[in-house]
Image (cartoon, rainbow, N blue to C red):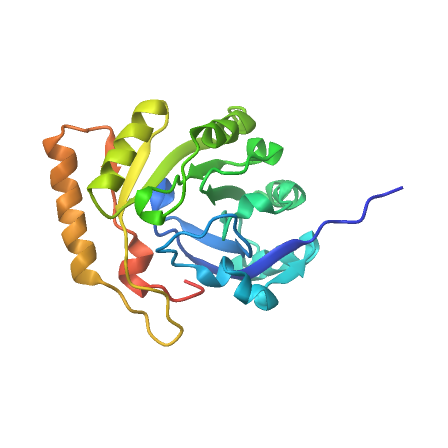
Length: 242
């Protein structure tokens, strides 16, 4: 008996636009954002893809339905597809990745590293974003290790950590020591909550944290870390679909 196809729970599909953060920053990308997450970070900027209050807005879609959207947006031009969320690692993405790679597309996954999947090995890029103390979530290094193991040397793997304060910075230093084989990207966070009406942004706070973070990294001679802004936040705040 052929099993029933698992649907992917979609919050939004949008692009092409640029990737706004991490190792692929600036790269033209179509985003497939899923609904649902096992975390509830205090400063989450994508609550519409996380909080169950929005679950009626999430659409269960087949691989064909998702891929039709990606092809329409990209006009059939193979580019990077970013699987994001929420936590996209919850979703059954293996068939979609196989479909897209057959057509010449590449795939990047952005996840906090709390759930490992065998299909991680089929990705081109795996960006792990362990959450620092300011998130209010507990970091479990064993879960991050499981994700790296699941990738089996398939994708390029990097870490991306949002920084708000000294505790977050100390956390990033500690994680970097434990996972020193991974390139690490540090980004000052945005305290402004999401809003439907305006692309609000705490620009002064972000720039202050950026300058502080640059000074902190250089004074500590932590030359393996790369400090980047969240470019999409600077351009569009927390607007959906950008």
